[in-house]
Each structure stands twice: as structure tokens, then as C-alpha cells.
Length: 286
Ligand SMILES: [Zn+2]
Image (cartoon, rainbow, N blue to C red; front, side, top):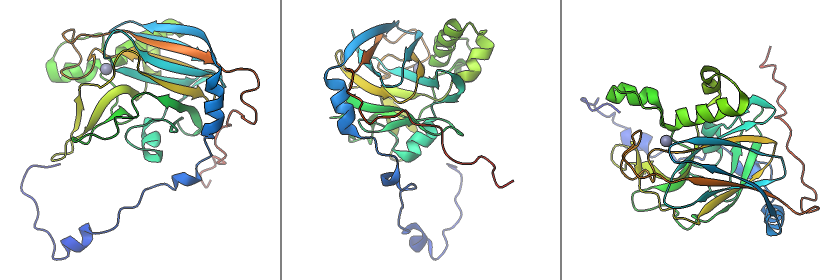
């Protein structure tokens, strides 16, 4: 917002400001996320794989549709930047902006991570979040935002004039390039706005600027997702660590993150079907 002189408010300014806010989408009309089925699926699930994400680095993981995955805090408070793709078509990827519009600025159990247009379908549903007690604090902050983009070397260079290679954008790029044998210049084009796992953020009450504060996550905390479609995921252990002081440097203490993949018991998913792509005709009136 401009900090220069403002125009004089019109005579009916108070009346204009008093318009009633409307939540943009009728989210109660979204396809049901059937939480009781997910809770049953997670009761007797077995861990089938795990991937450790090293501090200030990234790693990929695959989750078949109908499986679950957890992102677990280990060793110390650490924020993770999550990317998700359709494992068979990288052009369909996590759509943080639409997820924010359909749910909220921060997500937790029962919320879904939606894919980009024209697919627009749930890629994953959050089935458990050990930080759901946090809610909204006195600064207006919450945990697990879908607001921020990801720390990146371009913004860092613009602000500081130095090259730094371990921003989340680069960590995700290296991880995807390694997993797919793409050159980094191609892989980076698939890296997208993230879900900020465990990150504690909000907008300042006076200027509405995006802020971060030390994450409340502690070792043993986790957030768990049900994969609605076959997923390729990438996770970066942000160089900001708990994001309580700085980012895009090697100063802050950083810790690994663990990704665990779980398979539900046979028969636990009765009645569940992987969602298809969005049903819009795609003709755009032509
Ligand atoms: Zn980061």
C-alpha cells in the first residue's frame, strides 16, 4: 500500500466500508473429504518407505494414490517447503492460490491440496496435524501456510547482491532434476509455490505485510496426508530452520526432515475412488 498522501475519503466512505464480507466460495459444496474413512485407513497402516531430507537440501518421494505420507520433525524445529506433482504429468501440480481460496491462508486436518487448472482436483487430503492446537495466535499467525512462495536465489540476489544456492527453490530444483534426469534449467520450471509445512506466518496487523516467527514445531510433530492421486513430492528443509530469525543464508541452525510413506490395510478404503480431472468442458465459450 502506498505511504504517500491519501485521497480524501468520499462522504459515504463509512457506508462503503461497512459492506458485509462474503466468503468467496461455497466450500460446503466441495466434494466430501469423508474424514471417517481416512481415520479408519490410518488406524492399521504400515510404513513402507521413508526419505530423509538433509538440512538446507531437498529430496523427492513418491506416494501411490490411496497411500498416506507424513512429514515429521526430527532433531530440531525445522520448516519444510512442499511441492506436489501428478506423478504421471508434471504439468498438473499443487495450486497454492486456489487452495488458499477454497480453504484458508493456513491449512490443517480435513483441508485438501488442490491441483492446477485444468485438472483442479484434490491431490492430497490432510488427515492429521499434531500442531492443530496452535490455531491463531495474538499476532494473527498460524501454522502451515499456503501464502508464501518459497525462498529463492533470485529474490535473494535482488535484495543482497550475492549468490546463495540453498534456498528452497534451488533445493527443490536439484531434487527434481536428480529424480527425473532433467537439466536443472528444465526442472526449475516445474518448481512451484509451496505449502509451507510447520512454518508460522501471518500478516502484520498494521501494514498487512507477510511475516514469519519461530515455528512451534518440535521433534515428533508431524503432518499427515492421504494421496488422492499418484504423487511425486519434493520437500526442502528451508535454510531458515525454524524461520524465527533469517532465511537464505547459512547462519540459522537447520535440521533434517523425515518423510514417511504408509500403506493402509487392504480393504480400508472401501468406497474410495481416486478423483478424476475437473469436469469443465475446456471450450471457454469458443
Ligand atoms: Zn525456504
